[in-house]
Length: 215
Image (cartoon, rainbow, N blue to C red):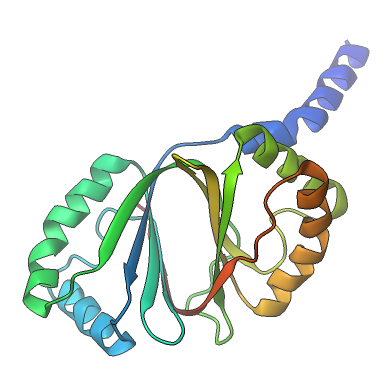
């Protein structure tokens, strides 16, 4: 019996990275507003809070600023139904404010949360990886290889979402600082190259606000 338990424990250890990689479910929204400002965002947030809509339906949200102008945001939802309900609820507020973001929704392949601070870190960033054509097998193996060389989730990573597109899997992360991301990147880049994953530079935004709810 002791031998059997040892074998099962070893199997669990070996398979755990794959089990983590296989976790899926939920929906991701990505919103872009090429000409919007943080003042526009703050106005909409204030209106949503006044109506009790700010935390409804989504479990995590991050807003970032692009350069030279514009906003980039992400929202994590338990499912597409929750996304649809939020969009229906908040649309009148957006219309009244004259806000017209470009919103796309995707199915989540895998996601996890690190330590979420109460307020957005002063040097926080949002990193969007457009690894064209990345397959599920490649992504799963990336996690396996990363766990061999560093703790997981990586230190300083607030959130991670791998989502499905017609062009393969893509990734969007939230980090406490560029330094934390760079430390992980030193481990990640050789792995991507070895696996033949597109290593085009990610798009990096400055984190402006974040929200974690119990939804």
